[in-house]
Length: 268
Length: 285
Image 1 (cartoon, rainbow over the protein chains, first blue to last red):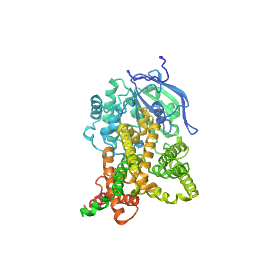
Image 2: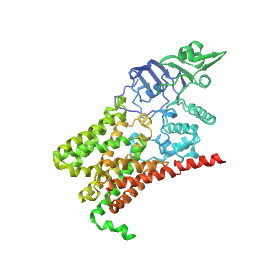
Image 3: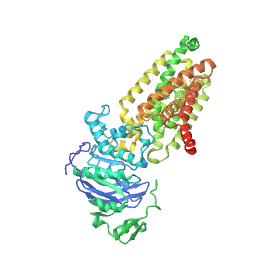
Image 4: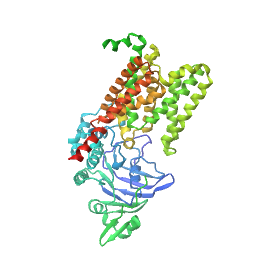
């Protein structure tokens, strides 16, 4: 592993590998994540599965440096977190955004091209092309000049995915991207995921849809505060593993597992 | 009619008053856009009232009242930040505590200075007719500096005010820029005190921007509209103040409030009136 000085920063040149080593995180004395370790290979598409409050969002926020680790380490490209400018893009849940703010779709996507090193500089021609391409890919170009508060839920989700794409990330983190969005948006997102798989972008998606997770992902990370198991879907999705993660929230009907999401909400 | 409009400005102090209130209308309206979008209205109010002890202490020490005001305003902003840091207290609680403490301190000191009583009402309510040439230059320079910084840091301020989570993920030092913004707010408030006074400046920071918010889909548009509303209110308020012989700050703020109410009811984007109208038509058909 290359050893860099503390203040040295690099930009990412290749698809990222993630090493999570023994991380623990807690809020006001409550443990959110305890001693979690796993490795994600270059360009993998990973589903993060767990009941509400299992620490899925917390894990993502730790990966972009929004939350301090209590112990343990996170390596991206073999380098500790904080050495990278722009290679991890995080798409938050829709509820966390101020939709009343006076910005247009294009304004939001352009934020993806912001660099701290060029505070004063306006967008370059190349930046503008990247923004355009991101909007095209998410099929929101026709809404470019609309304000974000009168878009549908699916369109709003796509705006934020477009901003993340404009960041040209090597790791893309999506927190429940399929929650309350229309079929068209789901289709566009899956097309995108297939496209960026070719570019070897590492993708992590938090979801509680076990069906999608078992069909469309290379590997699955099953968590409930601790890591239950990580690996290919066929190995992860066994009845004992799921029971361990979901407890009595999961019901098995023949070969199908049904998660009861209605009665436990993540505390705000 | 023309005569009626021009008469007030045959006096030099009225000319200065007009220029000062236009400048204040501009800057409060621009900075106010961040105050409104970042939900800092209560913070602005606290920073304005915190000026009182600053001015009083500066007066006792024979120092510059302006610097005293600025220092007190910045101290309360940073103090609120410290108290509410990492969720120790909610921000509005922190504001509530420090706001009243500063106000009490100001009153305490001022009540101990007997000769001060006359000037106090000027600090509280503004004295637009007492704007000296020096005051005017100070206000203009301050406003120019604040506007310049807002233009330079436009993109950063946009990101921070819209989405702090994203700002952190792209490694913008959010805390630093937020404090920087608070300093710009303090400068704006201090520059406006002479014209509208401590009690009214918070309203000038919120009302024109809130009215503009109801009509705009982009921040630059919101700023431009806010400036229009702010400047218009300043001018109308000044006429009202001259002809009705009432306090200028109060007249300006109430003019802005009336404009806000009109927009609140009739704005094509978010106006209550159209919503109700739609509901009525919808029910009939």
